Length: 252
Image: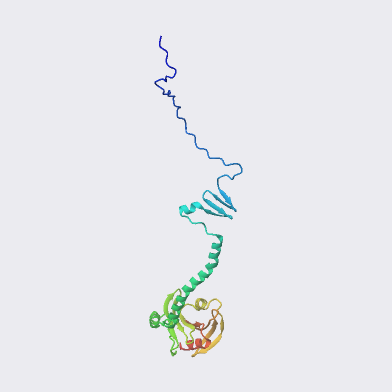
């Protein structure tokens, strides 16, 4: 039998026994704090008709994408900017056209005033006359006795269907056109080709001892026609009646 222990004796080992720890469970996601009743919910802010949602600011019906600043894209131009551009474009076009026309006008003035751009080029009729005489298709006549105001601007001889034709073009002292056509082509084919189908005889006239027939021609032209057995001679142009008579009489 053991002896009794004193009442105030404390056991030597006072360490509390270890309890088994609870197994780790899944971490619960933090739940957002719900707003108190009566407070506006967190989200797109609305104030004075302006809303901010998903990076876009909407104010007064106009939207500015917040993402545009991040991507470097500029917002579309407003209707007022388009209206201003459309109002300026006719003026800009007129200024551009004026800038182009001024140098052109200066060049034309220089060409006409200093280079004689309005003056017709004078040609030598000798080669064409020599060719016509060598062909011996018809008697060849050259105007004689014309003053210096008459300038030869065309001279060609060619063989065509049904005959040959010599054409001499002149610029009269008054700056009008006239030409002498000598051809072995039959008159019924030559006259409509040179005077058009509207060419009609208007009577006869004597020039340098020969009888010519006056004809109408194109709208502003008149003609003198000499009909011979082996050739037809036509003096036609928009020159004055007196100048055409002078040219026809110079053929002899």
